[in-house]
Length: 112
Length: 114
Image (cartoon, rainbow over all chains, first blue to last red; front, side, top):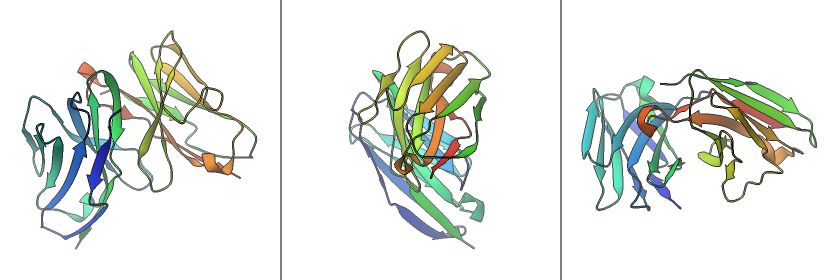
């Protein structure tokens, strides 16, 4: 089955700096790679996703890049703000199995 | 994207008892997914529920412990049976979005077993 590794597990940045979270996956059949933001006590919220026919996708301050050859994808947050502080999860899915496999999560703290 | 109503939002249960969690979706969906999130951990898939067939369980999860019902395309239940303190977790249901992308989650059930 799919295995997703995510790092770093914790990340602290100064407000206004950029944050990068990286994930690798094992199943070459996976073709869908979403990122979720989970604030304390709340459900995971989809913030951006990318499909395997695209190398990069951007939505305002958030961008995701995908390298299918190397089987890794990354989340980039620019101009970070305190409200970006949360746990971020990457996931991989699609292919023959439609369920998502999640990475272990990254606790992002944006320091004012 | 689909809107999911999940209940109860939280419960405190005695060991040895069972709790049934319900998820209602505002549109018809083929597949529903049940996840467990232990404190401070990631999301682990318990099972996939299809309407009209038995759920498919992931390694480490069995039907006797986590029976699932899927009576129609908008509703599913997960029961946590014969609970022990190790079952204390958040349980979440999830559905696919349009085109089998954009999975969304219910609000979660925070279960504490004492």
